[in-house]
Length: 607
Image (cartoon, rainbow, N blue to C red; front, side):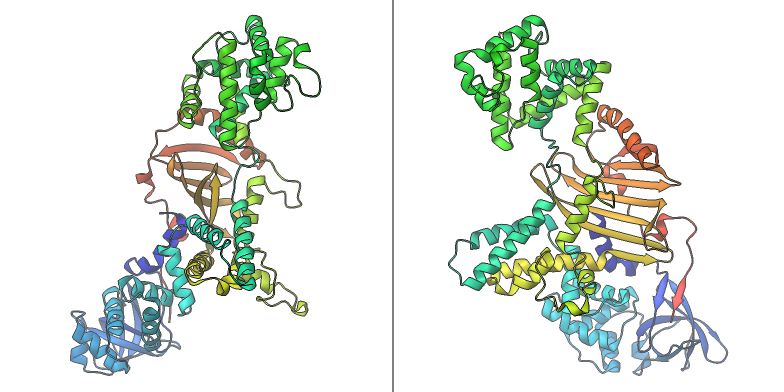
């Protein structure tokens, strides 16, 4: 379970865990056990896992359970036993008769919704109020959630201080039980595209068009590695470029050629004088000119610039390899296939190498498994570092490219929408309805009512998903703060959600202390599947635990770790260790902020 869903789930499961904070405002009702009686009508009461000392205005028996209502909460709290048949309200079991008596004592109607909520509060030993039961019953009926899940979420909202409104309930429900954010975005985009061909009125057509444009901007903002694509076609293309890169060290060039040969992509001897001469002859053959033009549109024999025929074989090889930049998708795969065929032809081999997606993946795995020696490892290191390029931008804040893109994506989703409205000058005259729909949430709010009903339902569900994330994004416990966000990503065409959770001590400016903190990354990837990275920082020393069920890629880790160490050192951090473990060992990774740090124990009771 990713951090955000776990944070949502913890709302409804917190009642079963040990409570550390209790809030009992005036009018609140709870079921408690008399632990011990003291003089002056004072008693120790047990509520769940907590003990409260209060003044009770009734003759009670130790060891018995009663329903109490908070009458006064100044100083020592003053409690009243709920006015009803006390013998009937002694709760040795939470049966329907007892629940009905509680409703009667509160002056509430005896119906399915009210009975269900009372029994849940009894079984979980949670406090409640008359208004909560009355408002909650209406809310659950409207939401169609008259079930245990609905009641649990309702009680959690009350405990966390969330307003008991339909919007809040639906938002939190979507955060815990809804489809992934990326899936909802894709579904709504497909529905809007289908509507664009329908003959709607001008206002509805404009709503569909404007929301569709904002949605596409959001999806584009989450498309990663646009400049440094990491699919197999471009990884192989990068190796070809390294093989011919004149500016690269000779060991890197020879290592790239050796790797291509080990994978069966480049014939043996291609880097010799005879091999290079044969490659030039193959390139200049008339029957190959169509393929050459398709692989290198600007470098064909009839193209502008210096003629290929006038180049020396080594110069031609370097020029063509360094300028091999395949297109995206299927067109790029076909260009790679044509290059492989020309290489095999130059090597005197009649059987061409196939370049399907599965076969290209196998080629890359073969290179990684068979890489040996300094030259091949250097070539692989350069290749991998190019895949993980994350240079700092030139902006004032100095974000890395990835951090800048994620920041833009959070803005585009509308996770800072309300704070942006609050910062608007009062004199601007802009209301939420008239502001430019420059983020997805604002666009949903502005155009949702104009959509046809089925698509409107999808848009409303997506809006609740975003709002639920906003409600759950931060949790404060003492000096420690926990922040979680979830963003949709597209990784080489694979759509997924990235959840990030920060935990740490809060500084005066509201930021987390960079020397002592923890960051959790949760990502479902196309080939690696469920992946969790737990980054723990103590005294600027970084320890990384990666949880994944695939076999540990020892060779890959060996090549990447020095690069990771170097990049961390640039930020004045040191790498302590990187561990790779199966997913089933990460069950204890997700903890509350106080559980993540030692020295925080005790009880804080507020009445």
